Image (cartoon, rainbow over all chains, first blue to last red; front, side, top):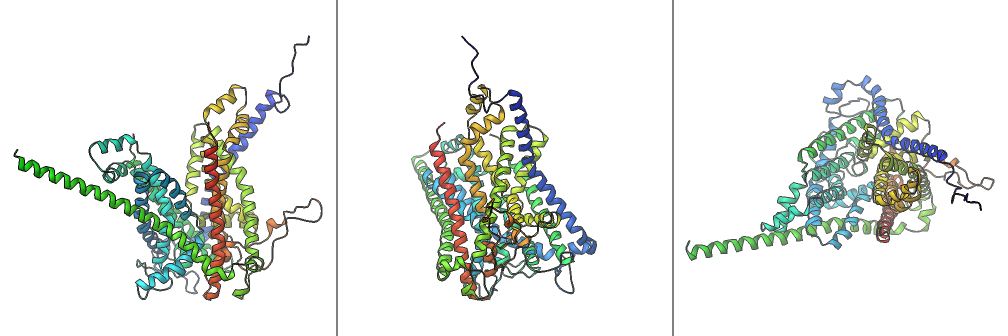
Amino acid sequence: MNVQTRLPAASPHAGLAYRKVRDRLVETFLLVAALVAVFTTIAIVIVLVRESLPFFEHVSLKDFLTDTMWTPLFADARYGILPLVAGTLVTTLVALAVAIPAGTLIAIYLSEFAPHRLRETVKPALELLGAVPTVVYGYFALMMVTPFLQKLIPGLPGFNMLSAGLVIGIMIIPYVASVSEDAMRSVPNYMREGSYAMGATRFQTATRVVVPGALSGIAAAYILGISRAVGETMVVAVAAGLQPNLTWNPTEPAATITAFIVQVSLGDLPHDSIGYQSIFAAGLVLMLMTLVFNIAGFTLTRKFREAY
Amino acid sequence: MSAATTDEAIRRIRADVSRRKVLDQVFVVVGLLVMFAALLVLAVLFIDLVRTGAPRLNLDFLTQFPSRKAERAGILSAWVGTSLIMLTTAAITMPIGVAAAIYLEEYAPKNWLTAIIEINVTNLAGVPSIIYGLLALGLFVYQFQLGQSILTAGLTLSLLILPIVIVATREALRAVPRTIREAAYALGATRWEVTAHHVLPYSMGGILTGMIIGLSRAIGETAPLITIGALSFIAFLPQSPFTSEFPFVSFAWLTDSFTAMPIQMFNWVSRPDPKFQVNAAAAGAILLGMTLLMNGIAIWLRYRFRKRINW
């Protein structure tokens, strides 16, 4: 009797050596795919720096940072980034004035008060707010929010930073709410129980135990909201006007860094012109601003981290 | 302590407790109000888009090219462009995103390289989309000479949604219990066999959900496409992907110039003529409808897969 039986299902499972080689090859491919993220970051830095070098040969860094006019498309061109930075900061601040209170309130409500079913229904619905295409939000700001605001504030121009900022604020509510809520939910239950045992109400527990305990996560949520608001493009390009304007008054029209990049991209400037190269310099500033906020956020998160 | 002061103290405590309970109730009401106000915005926006755009929401709108006359302009080239861009984006993102997630979740050793990759994925998720546009302009358009083509747009949006897909896929992979992997290893499977035969099939639902969320983000992206120089007035279609001769499919459309739904809408919104705002609203209603539909599918898929799997 022949005791030598064939190994079952040998066909796809050829020799061990072959399988090991295949495993190595697959692993290499997977590593390369993962490295795409690193290459992307490197490419972003290289492209922004390399393409803005010719710009900085033409414009001194001092003018760039201190001049109060940004008119690269005019005959009498001035290259001061300040008006664009101011526009970006004003719209961001208006947005945060909406998103931080609203987002935090919603997060506290969903995490500490809402019944389970309501939370499971509302959370995905809220996330839809963040999924709306930004150009649609631009339409919303220009065609609906601005006319409404004009009734409240007589003399408000058709393009203004207030309406753009408010709409960006609505847009980033889900980012702030969702990440804060996750942070609050990860505060262990025994801390809440301790607070209830002392006779605290749910509201007191939420504000005095849960929120302080989740502060690092909440800070991360705010930072996420800030970087979204700083980088938001279409809402401001549609609703805030495209005139660089050094002002801190949100009821005035002004351009942001992102809106300027869009404006130049829409035009037909030759690629080697200084105006065209200026969008990379503007992009570099935007990138640095997001970086600063992220580093600040990272440090804050570290500082407030609570270990359970 | 006299009885009077005790009574007084008890009354004070009772008043304090009821005050705090009222505060609790007030907060519940405020929380609910804010939440529903936010959701109301979404509803109002969608209803207004549909109502304003209603005169143009018909078949003609879908089958006509853009035009200088508002009432004759349509979104044919825009929706065809968007469809082809989404196809390209999905084809590029799916393999790279899933592979990267598998590497990070199943293979990556704990070392500096892994740490660098992780930091990069997290940071890229926070990079403004217009920066991706500048990257694409410098890299794909100038360096690789790919032009202002559908391929460039697909590559750009792929890079943009890669972090979303990677994070979602990792979550899906992480949800597969270790026991499944250990059982497969115990039977002599190699790491790739464990991943491909067991872990991946179980996490397919989550991966698909992440992919749809990523694409729903890409479909509405306007800024990066404007930056790479997408045109807003295109009165022709890209070459057909289907040909009458063997091999019946053609990829010539990849190098064609394009316009897309959000760009078409932006073009109409920025015109002063109010007639074009009707077109913008109609395009916006369709665009928002598509985004909401994709997100709805993703939510439904997530719910279904979560319900079906019992480890």
